[in-house]
Image (cartoon, rainbow, N blue to C red; front, side, top):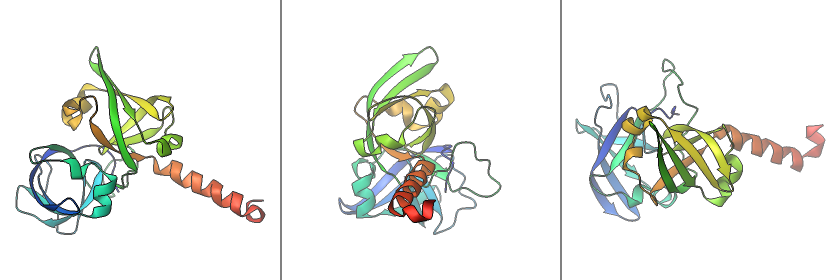
Length: 205
C-alpha cells in the first residue's frame, strides 16, 4: 500500500526486453533507498513494482505483460521522468489516501490551464471508470493522490498546487499525455458490497 504522496521524481535509466516483457532500471533521485531490500515494492508512476536489483542509485524491476497492457509503462522511454513512492509503513503519516498501486486504466490530459499560482488540469478517464470518480473524492494520477474538483461524464478536473507541480511529473505533461489512473479503493468495495446484496437479497435483510 501507498499514500499517493510522491517522494521523488526518478528517471528511466535503461529498458531491457521487448513490448511483451521488459525490465526497467530506475534512477531514484532523492528517494531514500537505505532501508529498501530486494522484494520490496516501490510505486513507479502509480504502478506497484517489485525491486529485483539495487545497483546503488536506483533499482531494477520486472514489468509483466498484464502491467504493460494496463499502464503507461510500456510507452516510456529512456530518460522519461516517473513519480516514486516507497511503500507505506505503520509509522508513516497517511497524508494522501490509501493507494494500492494497481492501476485501473489510462487517462489522457485534455487541458492544462494556468490560473494564478495554480494549474487546472482536465483528464479524460476510460468510460468504465467514470462511476468511481466523484466531486471531492480522491483519485490517484501517476501515483499522486489528488482531490477531484469537477466531473463531467468520464472527464474530471483537478487543481494542482505549486508544491505538487514542482515535486511530481505534472510539469512534464502536455495535452494528450497518457497518465495512470487508480480510483478510490473504497468506491470499488462499496460497489462490490452492493452487487453482493443484490445477488443475495435474503442476506441483506
